[in-house]
Each structure stands twice: as structure tokens, then as C-alpha cells.
Length: 439
Ligand code: PLP
Image (cartoon, rainbow, N blue to C red):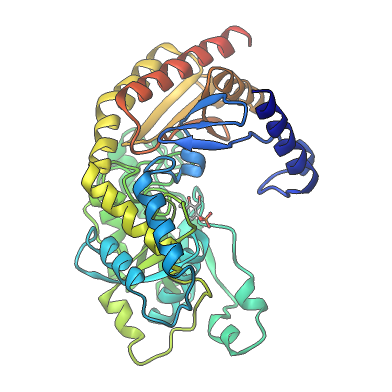
């Protein structure tokens, strides 16, 4: 353990000296050392163990160090560790086939990317070129990735078909707890959000709108499960105006919601689907776009002006084949559904009934948000100090939580066991009690 403490100190010292972190004021980063993991547990060098209720960045759906996936990566590395995207590669073909086996027949092709943001970039590119329109309507409460400049900075011909003077339009989506529509029921929220979306489309000039791009279940924005009928209504609006419907399943896909894709639960078939994270649990970075046969056909004779050096990277592809195979054989998606239905759903509802800091809990599968408020009547969001104290109280008890704004997201791996899920809830309960008592 003494050695371990030294390694932990070295990890923090090197990180603080040289690593520039995402989305952070660098002087205020407080890194958490992860040296190893297994299933739903991670540990530091000194051996402190944490139940991972964050799935890192909501991506280790199959848990840490799944042996089948680790072996597949090792095996592929020993045969062919990299290959150009323009080649045919058996592992890549098998990865595409394995993904497409879990989506409606209308989706027939996969364009592989390195991660989620470039999947969204390429979905937008596909929609614009397919429709000949340029605007993209998405929700204010959403996250789709952090890219946007590279292809426009490019000097050669590849810039030109990607240059658009106009672009992005936002609308409010349904979120009954903090409704923008004065709604009091899910049905009202749904109908009014659809009316608002359609009015935005019309007001922008429907024939300039290429795509409606939505997270099926907005994740980082607070696990905003849409009311019944919302996505089917969006599909109707898209069809009415010849707009491509892109569903972003980067966070919600591959078991997170208790089904293979979140849209499976919403009676809707999108034209394009973006994915990343859970497709191989991030063991090797990968993402992509699932493409309908109709949109794919647009590029039968016409050049698709998009590409990436590592599109369909063999290590990532091997990890996809093994991950999906393990998820199928081990009932991982069914486990996520059962954990949500039998443990997290009822457990969080019970916690919400007792804990004054909890304003609302919502979610499905292993995808839940606990919204923290200082006053349940006014629904005033809890300040950063309360959320920080709660996070510290969880860590002190061996639970690694995911916090975002005034929320704790309960997002363990899809392989979490009922006992682990109950243990995590018990820690969250104790931590809430402690923070409430010391406020
Ligand atoms: N889309 C959604 C819904 C996401 O949640 C994320 C990341 O959290 C992204 C896109 C971007 O993915 P990446 O960070 O892999 O580029």
C-alpha cells in the first residue's frame, strides 16, 4: 500500500504538471486516480475501491475489463493493429453486421468514426448533402460533441461541400419538471413541445431545414426521457417537411436505457443514428453513423465528402464484435432493464419521498437523474456547494458518482448486479442525509 500511495501521488503530480483537462479551469482540477477496474468497480494504486456509478463518462456499459473484449483486442493487435479506411477488413465488416442486427431493417450501412462528436458531424453532413438544405434544428437541452472547425479550416476541395453560411437553430424539448410550456401533464408537455418545434421549423423556412437532430433521451442535460408520443410526433414533422431525422444515441444506445437503442422504446425509426460510447464500452475509441438505405443511395454515384484516417480501426472493430457478442450472450441489455425496473426505479422513488434535497428522479434502465433542489416547492436548483459536498460524501463511502449541474446521474454499467445497485443507493441515501444535516 505504501508503494501504491507513492504511485497515486505520482499520478496526481504528473497530471497536475502536464495534463490539460476537458471543460475545466485548469487550476481547479482535482483529479481522481483510477489505476484498475473490474466489472462495476474501480480502484486506485493504493487499493481504495469504488463502485463506479458513473460508468466513467457513461460509456463502460459492459463494465471494466470484460475478458472477452480484452482478449479480442489482444488477438486483433497480434494480427493487424491498424489498417487504412479504404481497405476491406473482415473485422470491420463483422462489426457493422453485429450493430445492424439490432436496428430496424431500414438502416443498412455504417460509417465508422473515432467517437461521438465526429459521428454527429458526419450525420449532419449526410443530412445536408442528401436534402440539399443546410439548417439543423436541435434542442437547447442537449450535448452533441465538441468539434466544428476542422473541415472549414481545411484549404483543399474537401472544405467546399462542407461550407455553410448558416446552420444551427434550437428549440425547447419536453421537460415537464421545468416546463417551458406551462404544462401540468406529460400529454400537455408533449403536444405543446411538438407545436413549438413545428413552429420553429416553419419560421426558419421548412425547406431550408436539413435535419432535426435530437438525443433520443437527452443525457448530459439530465436524462430527460421524452413523454410518450413525442418522438413519433417529431418523426411526423420531419416527414411532413422532408427533413432527415437524426437520433443521437451516443449516450443512450447499447443498453443504457434497458433496450439496445433508446428509440426502440419510442415507436420511431430514424433516418440516421449516431453512436459511440457503449458500442464497445470505450475500450478502444469508436463511434459511427447508422444510415438508412435511402440516404446511403444518395452516395451511390456521388462522392461522400467525409472521411477519417481511423474510420473502422481494427482494434476498435474487434472490441465492437466482442462487446456486442458478450452483451447478447450474457443478457446485458436485459439486466439493465431489470435493474432499472426492480432496483433503481423503486429505490430512487423511495429516496425521493424521504430526502428533502431531491426534487425529482427520472430515468429508465441504468440511466437515471436525481435532481437536487434547495426548496421542493420552488424547485430552486441546489448550488454547486451542495452538489460538491454530496460528491465528496459519496467518494468518502466508496461510491464514484456522476454529477452534472444540480444533479447526480445514477448511471452504473449495464452489468451492475442488484446488490451493487442497492449498495450504491444506500451510499447515496447516507450522503444525502449527511449533506442535508450539515447545510
Ligand atoms: N452525443 C451525445 C449524446 C453525447 O453524450 C456525447 C458525449 O457525451 C457526444 C455526442 C460526444 O461524444 P464524444 O465525447 O465521444 O465525442
